[in-house]
Image 1 (tube, rainbow, N blue to C red):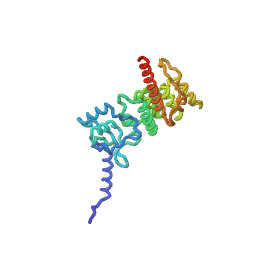
Image 2: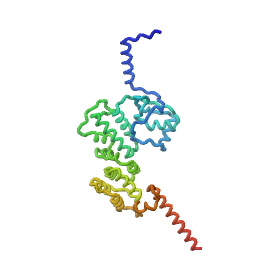
Image 3: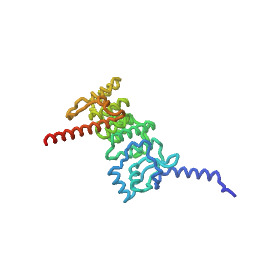
Image 4: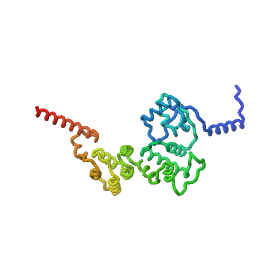
Length: 310
């Protein structure tokens, strides 16, 4: 059997041609199960009413705007922009999605991923926090401003700094960029309370200076007292934490302070009633048990009143 003769020129030009082909940006349909999410993607993809509407639209009209992906070294693709479109397509029962395959470094992909979400109507504080942090770190690693959406020219960062640039791009001040990034140091349960608008941004930033154990105690106190720290209270918590003098009693006492327009509440510390519950009971389980006992007490009281009337 004779093998085809391959010259040096053939090898060189075919390799070069292949390299040029790989550099070209192109669109093709890709199987959804071949696309993985962007690592630590900061934006939540929820199966809410808006998602269901998008899915119905895709059933009727298909995906109008292709997603942006990049090829992975070990095969398959990594999503850069289009996580919600991908999920809506899955819900529509469609197995493939049109995609633009784009060559990007890790930092370029991070910056593009964050920038592609600029126009979202609502962005949660937690989403901003991790998105800002990811972009800031990517820009610092690059040592330059790489604006992938406008000018291809990369210019050195000027004296404004990366945080101010990000703030201008997203409509936030430099200080707010740093405030949101600080939220990434909150334990997930406290960060969720910020997303739920139970804790405002400024007090949340102060609380983020507490260590993990202190934050967990604070969460327990919040659930027990049904009270959320004001900015002034959060500043006190931070100061005591930094002075290494913050105790569990301090946290409860600070939250127990009555705030303006605060409704009258019955409060007690978990430690004062924990002995009456099985070992390992969570705060929520104790609250539910207390509510049930009070409901039983009320029903018994009403029953006795009815019996007395008879």
